[in-house]
Length: 293
Image (cartoon, rainbow, N blue to C red; front, top):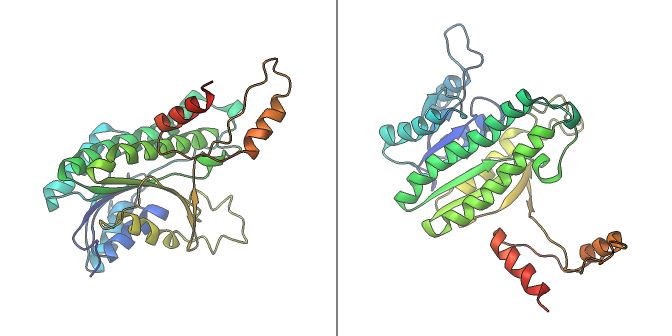
């Protein structure tokens, strides 16, 4: 029997693509799933993507319920949590997969597009994560997976708002992991490569068939396992492979007083010892200590 059997998990953006794959994999392992996806398109019966995913889960013998709220609406976060508690009496996990891309180059960015992307990808992620983590902390534990992107790690041309939003999600995940550790609430960030409605147009055709959303789902389920002690990791995932990512600082060197030789100083720092830290205060303390006379 799976360790996820009987656990209750909220998955946002679960009507299609990666979110759907996550919800179905969790349900197949025995989890009860709140399937969130706003109804942008409905069929002749008035059913949207979340309803169809719930129908798949029920047909396979699992248990799930649909929610059609927009994640950037504060009421949605509270309702998702309330739905889990009212229906099943508990909340054990959260996956934040809801996102929009809004491609625009930086010099062409409009306030409207920027706000739309940040509202869904950042505000929506924060609101749902905050509501869920409050319940998990009170219960003494839980598991959270935030879905980001390597665009937020490395940057990506033509999607400036999206890249900025996903960088924010990565920072949020590391912060949540540091805050929740003592309360048994573990948070990790997954950066998936997958062929989805959002990515298929720009996906290299050599890899499109390999990058199935279903190949990322087992990692997400493993991170939601109540027995998993993994916390604060940023993990790139695709096609059954994973690669750990981190925020890295180079060696400490002195800034040239006259500003001349800055490029050489930066090269020396890059060639020096590599540093990683669990959170910003630890990074500051280490940097300050090295600069003491």
